[in-house]
Length: 157
Image 1 (cartoon, rainbow, N blue to C red):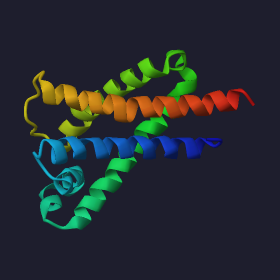
Image 2 (cartoon, rainbow, N blue to C red):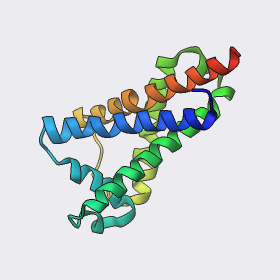
Image 3 (cartoon, rainbow, N blue to C red):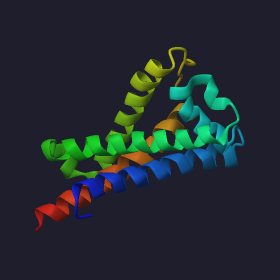
Image 4 (cartoon, rainbow, N blue to C red):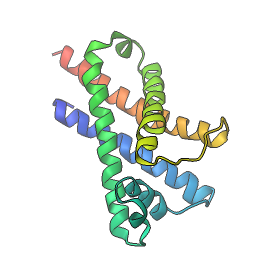
């Protein structure tokens, strides 16, 4: 990627795609605990509350759009802090793992409690660990890798 905007959009698109496909595969296809439509509607419910579950597929599209907006915001944040945090430049994998954990913390301990004041209690179990691993491998590492690639390219010019 040669442009800042292109890099942020690419990392948001890659991370957002991985981060929506993985839960759909795990929870809807493999475990059959929900459907892809319900996953997308649950994202839309952050804005539309119970109306998101009206059965209207339009809400799934809103959920998908919100999902990519959020992924791109996280990509932009990482891209912006990268030049100022030397640790991020030293090891892309560790930086990606830590950023994935950071994203999980922000989403689960800040954003979701604000949007949904009543949430089920969290306990250290397989679903919690799985949700963290999904964000590490689908958000943190791809964003770290794509961002590093941009900054390496521009510093070598």
